[in-house]
Amino acid sequence: MNTPAVEVGIDDDLVDRLVRRQHPDLAGPLTLVANGWDNVVYRLGADLSVRLPRRQAAVDLIVNEQRWLPVLAHHVEVALPVPVRTGVPGEGYPWPWTIAPWFEGRTAAEVPPSDRSGLAVPLADFMTDLHRPAPPDAPRNPVRGVPLSVRDEAVRRRLPSVSRSAELLPLWEELAALPDWRGPALWLHGDPHPGNLLLDGKGLAAVLDFGDLTGGDPATDLAAAWLVFDEDGRDVFRSRVDADKVTWERARGWALAVGTALAVHSADSPAVAAVGDHVLDQVLLP
Image (tube, rainbow, N blue to C red):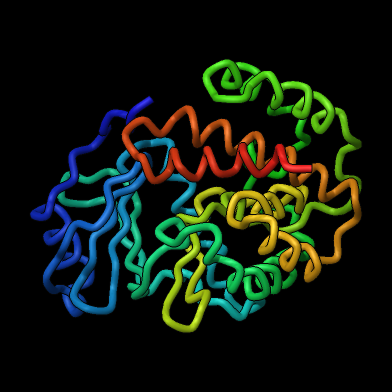
């Protein structure tokens, strides 16, 4: 599966006009840096970024970030892309958009898994700080933070398209049958794969892309133990997080679910497909 079709055309001229009309004091040179499934991201000058939904499905996600990232930033030590300004529809563009800080660095996806162990402690600490009870009006997400059984049909549909599916299917059936999370719905990042972790020379510089932000089962985020790390890094990460054995097993199930999605739906992104392959190899380790 390739990147979904563009629903609204976004180009340099449109973004420049939006910024100049709504935030003229921040206007400056624009450089396109990402054109993803849901959003287009430009660098604005040296220190800012502009993020605009390219599909209707992404609009609520960016609104959630605008509403909740300023709140969550008070609870964590790692930098988040808290909006500097928000934008409204205009210049023919129909949706809200965001100006946020620009963070220098490279993503963990650009680093071999064997070199990511240094992220284990700061990422575990970030999740410990983030995983606090979410309020009743926290965003709802139908595919994150929910019982693993909710993802059963989608995972089974993808498994025949991935390598080692004969080994992965019985593992998935075992993990999907585990007891559901019985605690309060906790704040979740929702998509803790290596492409959303930004590194600088000192370590974890920022956690990016909170489009899947929701409340629910912390196992969804703890899947990072398999998404991000190899065995050594995973041991360190797990030693820093207070979670019971069943939660860790559900986290393994979440890693399997996400890994199948990354492996199957990333034909246009070899780097993302490689993350998917890594995850599926890791969840099969004893």
